[in-house]
Image 1 (cartoon, rainbow, N blue to C red):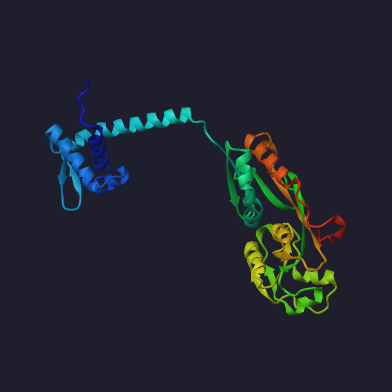
Image 2 (cartoon, rainbow, N blue to C red):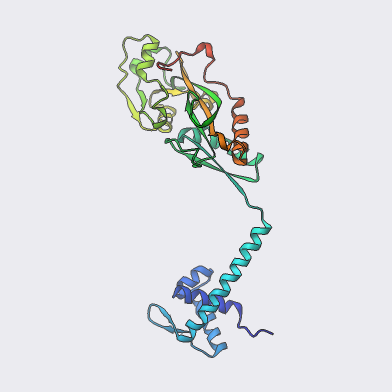
Length: 313
């Protein structure tokens, strides 16, 4: 039969000796420093030995305490390892899949779909990586990514999701009925983003020329360096912006935002991309099915006949 002091006393001693503090030991164990001190005094009484030298602001181990710490620490580490291993064997490892997209696309079009993902794939954890700088999918920075462009990505497979279009958009209450009304409105601009460098995203000057307007100061207004802030400014009624109709589809459907007039300038398309060599990996295959199905029913920003192809496309 083993002759052992109470486990609680040994645990308090090991924590206090390892951390060299009754206060820190109490925080780790979730008890009060007084409780730790009581447990250790009980242990010292059971052993008939002084284990600590109490000083004003700290405690130090006696030679007997130091001798006891080594086997106690090894014993508790061994027990913790055995518990971790047992739990790991009994509980299946969860799988993690990483999907990367621009910050605006992730916030506006992916986050609302997260609940549906959890319902369909309860054994998977989804990691959304939001960044306007493209990740290196081939290097494994993400399992799949959503890119905006023409669909040509060397070394990557690309599946088309939804075609984009751009048009003037404003809050429902603004008195905009025809293109000429823009002369008395505040124009909202979005500065060039990393993902737009090769994407022929139209500017207000591009739109003015397509609309045939001769009098419109396309340089005036308010500028934002991120798409989400520009969209929020439009929702708040601060002006009118040339926005991606894909990004604001929920607000257009709800009537929060309106597209008062055209023309619509056709954009490029969003694609799901992944490394060709990783096509059969479980995370890639699962995300490919989920994303494609989610956007299969999403309408394009404008019917092909209504689009005006952007310059350089």
